[in-house]
Image 1: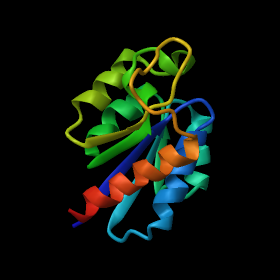
Image 2 (image 1 turned 120 degrees about the vertical axis):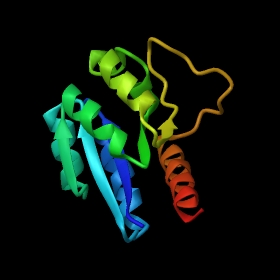
Image 3 (image 1 turned 135 degrees about the horizontal axis):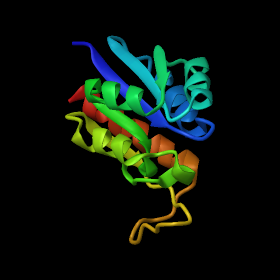
Length: 139
């Protein structure tokens, strides 16, 4: 059964690039990775990292994110106006309304705080996110 993993990222796409690298290391068969950037730079960098295809902008995210069995990205993809305003309320609505399972990295930002989470280095968060994805794909 073919599964679709959607990676959503903005700014320079650095988190998305790292997620794609780690997912590709799993050697998953029958899995498509779609990169959705809030901007063209993020989308382009994620394609270079190994996404099968990509698109950028609000409409691309709204139209494509519902196709994902899994949606991965920083927690800012579900907070309107995060990532310095790159995440629109429409993008958040699309991500949250999607039937796919969301696996989010709890990255802190200046305008909100996540209380009760153990602070982890980004590398550890990425490992945990991809381990959870692998577990869900296998179940």
